[in-house]
Image 1 (spheres, rainbow over the protein chains, first blue to last red):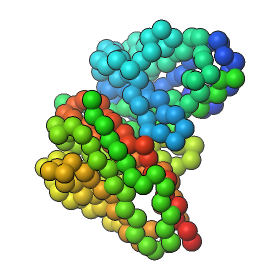
Image 2: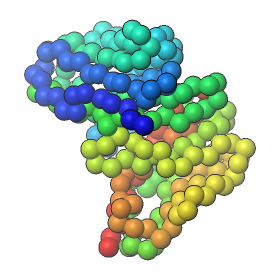
Image 3: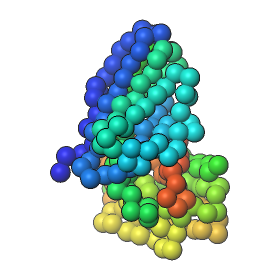
Image 4: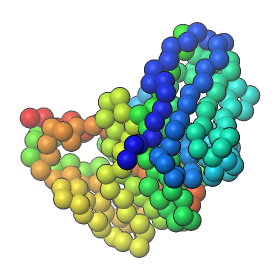
Length: 115
Length: 111
């Protein structure tokens, strides 16, 4: 079974430019997460989707970050405009949420460098 | 919100020795505690987890213990091998809510 797929794996952009990340979760997983991982730190949740609905976006900086999961499968995370401090790894994870705690499976991440 | 602290931040052991990583959490309602291993350039991978109704769980060379009263849990790796070298993260979760991660422990197993 394929795992969580993310693209691109690496992205280098200049500050003030837009950037977008794409995630394809494990087939059948209804819950999708976007995490931010700074160097030497643990992942921090940005947004969580249950199917198409964003059920927790309290940590998403909405002035420059946006996300969507239109058909309840793939998701995109966008930053516009990017700032130097956005350089980090952006991780996508998915789980099959049955109401109990289910394992979150992570993708390999997108490493963003803002110059 | 939940606060998860993890120690040590780095750990070096000789091959064959044991490694122990400890975490504490603040929310007494937390009831699920997974451990993830992250290798360079990869995403975190679940290695073991424990729920609050269990005090200990073991899977081959890996074990996790949970002390709900003290609000701490630990990862134990026995007979360490070079391929165990990675960054390990603990996490906690309350109900079906979000995971909160520790700051990670970089484990180095010296051949």
